[in-house]
Image 1: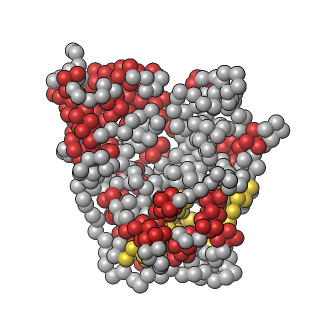
Image 2: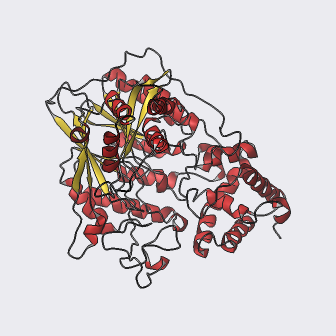
Image 3: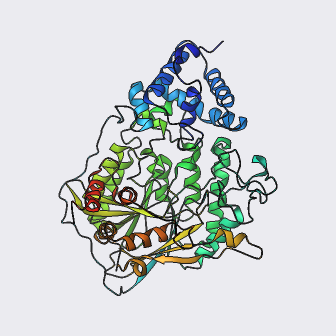
Length: 571
């Protein structure tokens, strides 16, 4: 049948329908325009009309593929691949959601429509909270434990040295995506500071050098497959994950390796099916069952049920310490399945409360691992707020939180919602192992007060290691991961307790030299701060607000730091 679209999209830019569906996969890509609320609602309504008129899913997908090609948004195989991969899921969700077009578009576009929230909800959190306790460890600590943190490794098993480092595709550095013309940049042997991921031998070298830091524990916070999201399927992603796990087993056969699940593990990217769709043939068994098999090389068998239920688990690798791995993909606003069921879909946050309550009762302290940090703009406001409430309740039990996702070196401070100046926890964000633009591959070691009877498991120091990709790719070069900075030597802190990290941000608001040091530390593609570098008051507000937003629904801490920058508040 002919698909009826033109009369339903009158008044729109003709390329708007293609941008809508593509937005769900490549929301931040430069080729995808930012839709207005009206444009989005009109396309959603048009899709409803098409389905009501009897258009099949395949016919609708074919229409979007042709529109994507017609307006030259991406190469033909990218248009075809991403629509075929995700189109059926998106259309199923739009056809079955109870939310209005305004809410669907507001939630997906975040702020372009009046209604940007899904239905609010909460979980049951016990009372009887003990007095907040954030111990400053003894100095020197009687014993320390070294925790290696790896994140966003994104290995590209099809990486081709000599291919085009810059191309028309969302990911480059493969011959299939183009070869360089004379004078154009070619993919280097070890990788490229471009829209590319790292080859397997670079991943192997990174993990081999990270192993030389002699960690007692290894935290891996997700995103192991590459960024060729239009060309992926379940098996291709599992191949990349298995390859990474194989290298980790080689270098850490006995050292506990504790994983968390990233948004790129799934195919389509960001797609984590909720139980409301299970009876219609959609599920996550392909991923959760495979991860349970791979992860339990380092985990006890009792973690299997939780991994298979929702990609989360808890485990005590050392006496006194419990590590909880959270599947943060149910806060991801690019996970369209949440439009069907957003209230703690797999019971994960209620499980988190119960697990933290048991840890509190037994006297254990906890490290939380996840991929998407809770203060990110792409973490749903309600989910983030409930998570923050849980952290506040168990702030004396939680001694560290560790995330990735942004590829950047950063942190987020979580605050008491009734007092936006009282920090309760810090979410440390580790820089990526991949390049994928201007990031030199990195890893991090957290030095903990641990392994003794009075251990607090507080972060004493943070060591960040990075290599210079340009030097590694030079003739006769090879990667050399060197210590870029430590928090103790760079900032003069004795530990990274929430209050110490909060004070660092407050000091940066008025101390330009301290902020400049932070910028050099965290922008690892700089060998030195460029002469052209500058950051005016608005720039400073933006950078520091990122550091104090640990609850995406609460801008109070951001407003507080802005007032300090403006000189309105001095504390």
